[in-house]
Amino acid sequence: MIDTPGFDDDSRSDVEILEELAEWMARDGDLKQRQLDGLILLHPITVLRAGGAERKRTRLLKNILGSQAYKHIVIATTMHEHLSSEMDVKERVDGRRQELWGDMVSQGTKLVEHSNNKESADKIIRMIIQISKNSGKLRSLLQDELLRDPRLIETTAGKDVKRQLEEEVKRVTAQLQQNAQKRPKKPLKRDKSQQGIAARRAWRDWRDDQKELQEKLDMLQFRLKRLNSLSVSWGLASSPSLQQGYVY
Image (cartoon, rainbow, N blue to C red):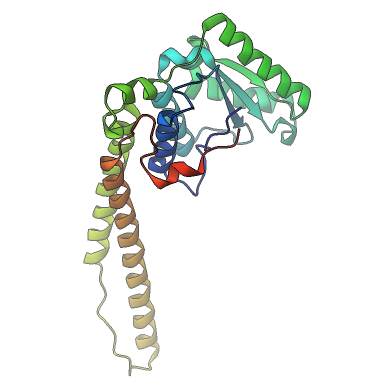
């Protein structure tokens, strides 16, 4: 059993998640020697509708695995105990099936309920074992693409993450420029009037907004530069982050 980074991890960017997964795939002794039987995607069902972040995570998963791997996936919905009725559960599951998982389910992905106990977990694991017996081992699109070209930016997942980053860079750059045009007149420190106090507050608010936008832009540009520079070496860990490994 291999515990991978969660796609909803706020402490990791898509670039970092993609880097860790790609380099783990390339590390000697892992997928080079042992192939995967399948993949279990744990998905909390407490949120009614699929939001933008959820769609983004699902797209990243699809781009990493590729449609040929869909028959090896079990989507296990969780946190059913937090909902008041079976109708609530059904509405949420049906909504995801239509909006996010329809193509996966139609190509073999199994959709099951995880009841948060050992019996339920064992049942899901047995499903993965049976899938492997029937369909062979799982090979991901990302793995095949990296074998052809070790540059992460040339993979389907890498290209999609790059496109999203570039769109975000454009959006934040436009916000930064728009905010710069709203720059208020810098107030005099010696002005103690109510108008002077309000002017200084407006200046500080503008300065803080500008700083926050610039820091966000710098972070996005760093991630984009990092993504463009990443490549894996089969049998070697090409960056220090790989040395951490995963929980087995």
